[in-house]
Length: 316
Image (cartoon, rainbow, N blue to C red; front, top):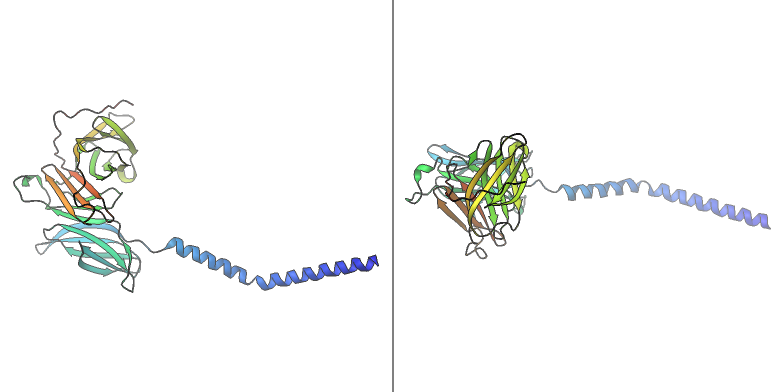
C-alpha cells in the first residue's frame, strides 16, 4: 500500500513537471517580443524630438540692404517658422539631417525674432528657447554716434542662460590683458549671470562693489560664466572679474553696473522691450512669458569707471 502511494506521488510530480515545461515552451516566443516592445517604448520616450536651436547668426549687406543669416538644428523634415513680435517673417523646412538656414531682412529696425517648429498638421511641437534680438544704434545727441562701430546690437538670449553677443555696437567688450567681460544678465529676483572669455587657464573671481560674490573655472575655448540667484541689490556699483593665475599677477576688468527695478508692465505685456542707451553702456530689458523681466547689459571696451570706485577685498 505504501509503495503504491509513493508511486502515485512520483507520477503526480512527473505530470506537473511536464505541464510546467509545456507552458514555458508556449510562452517563450512572446517573451522576447514583449521585452523588445518595452525597450522600444523607453527609447521613444527618452529620445523624443530633436530640439530647435540656433547654430549661427550673422548680419551682412546685400544690394544695399542689411540682412540676417540664421542657421540651426531641428527635427528632420519639420517646418521652422520665424516671427518678429507676433509678425510672421519666413518659414523653412529642415533637411534629412535636421539642418536649416534662412535669410531675413533686417534693414535698420529693432527686431525680436523667435522660432517655432511645426509638424505636418501645422501644430507647434517645439519653441526655441533662445531669442534673437536686434537693437539698432540710436540717432540722438545724448548718445555719441562716434562711439559705435556697428549699426546694431545683435544678441542671442534665453532665460537662465548666458547671453551671446553676436555683434556689439561698440565693436568689442571691456578687456584687460587676456580677460574679457561680455554680457551681464539679471532678473527681477536679483539672479545674476556674468559671462566672458579669457585666453589663459585659471579661475575667475567675481566682485560686486568690494565684496567677493563667487568664482568659476575657465571652460572650453576660454569661455567662463558665473550664475547665482538672489545676489544683486538695487542700485549702481562696480562689477569686477579677476583672473586668478598660479604663476603670474592677477588680472582684473571692472564695469559700472546698475540694477534697475522691474518694468512697470512686466506682468501684463509679454514681449515688451525697453532699452536704456548710454554712451558706454546699453541695458536691454524685456518681459518674459509667464511674467517677470530679464535684463542684459553690455559695455563698451572704452567704458569709464568713476574715480571713486572702491578696490575689492582680494585676500584669500
